[in-house]
Image (cartoon, rainbow, N blue to C red; front, side, top):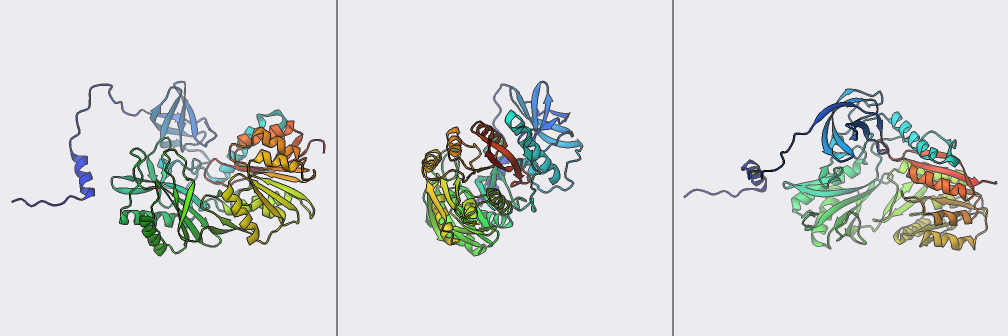
Length: 482
């Protein structure tokens, strides 16, 4: 009698790969990808190389302006082509000599990583200038050189990573651009080293304990995302597993395994997100083990950060922005300041250190809870934090606080609604400081503020996100008739 041997999962996949495939149905013949040599004309707003071919725009990630490159056409749309960079035939002087990331071609999350750092800063400076020049009232505004980062690698202190599985192997990383394929990222050069260590151990534990990964097609499985926040000053980390449903038993085992291998993890949380959309975090978060929050240090301020609270990814550059806002505000005891979209209170608490009364406004209630706890932890009594609609609360404050104070606004990428800007101008501050992460919405909002009686005096760009096309900027405005 023949002896039968159990087939492992890996062997099964090998057998499947060797099995003859069903004959392809007659129809349109699949054509081989086209390749061509072309010169890159410019970089677009996302830092992607752009050329023209057969009357269409050709996008080539990883290519730099002026380079002659060999490209494989991977997608052909009605108006746009997308190409994969093959070989650089003539290099740009801006191209860096060292290849710093083996995943760059597949991940494409850092579109400027092939560019030397000084050239990245010039690119970002130009982005802001082009955005400003689209509005006549903003032309000629004093735009300072970009503050570069002292550490352009290893700076990211938080990461939200997608989890996937392919041929029995767990993947933790980012979606490939334009798809739901997960690019497995190990040793990401932008992440703080502790983030990379944690992601590696989580992958090991998921495979060892055979925990199911969520499948977005079948909508079955447990683990969806992995969120990690690190306090570089304290050398500690918070880990949040985003799951499709509640689960305590398996996640508790995994949390203990992670904690044993990475003792720097002081908090493990479970966030439940049963939705089918692309939003990463759900509304409910449950602590599995450790502390409820992560304590971080930015400049002279300690911050308590909750699992779902937003916070900047670059601590060193965030501290520089805090100091700049404080310097430009020039507050004294008896002054009043309003910090709109205050988050967990970093800017507000720095302003209050000069003796002024500061009111922080934020729509996310958990962030407001953190902000109040942060003020107590730092023994800052002059801060009041309010949760609610920005325009409504600012409008109410205009009836209560005297004009001549300072207003700070730090909105999301979408910028401010006009009614929010009108409410801010209604406070009649002597100085208005706008902190932005999007040059396009910054320029749009500065133009609106110019029509509301506020003149932009200067803008200081700050590179929070080296190797990517993103740029932060801080603008100082004063009354036009001042």
